[in-house]
Image (tube, rainbow, N blue to C red; front, side):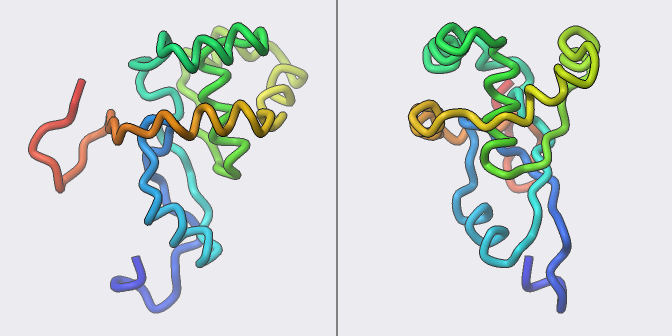
Length: 131
């Protein structure tokens, strides 16, 4: 990012999930005070049934999508919740407030270990993206 701007951008929109964490970019953004907007927090639904996500979902009595959204919020990202999640899960201000509650440290440690570099969005550097 620093190659293209004299001043860093105030934020960047990237894919960031427990399953795809570009650690170098995330560290650079944090060190440069660049905000992260997580554009695909639920990994297009591809990991709703992942064993760790399911275990956290059951343990905390929340949906798998809420687990993934709250992972991003806990990391300090602005999260773009998918419209289907908003339409089916958010019923009022209290529901939105619940999404802002950070996940416990032990849950975050478990989810952070799921980083397998699974991209669900198009990347101009990649020939193919796993669907």
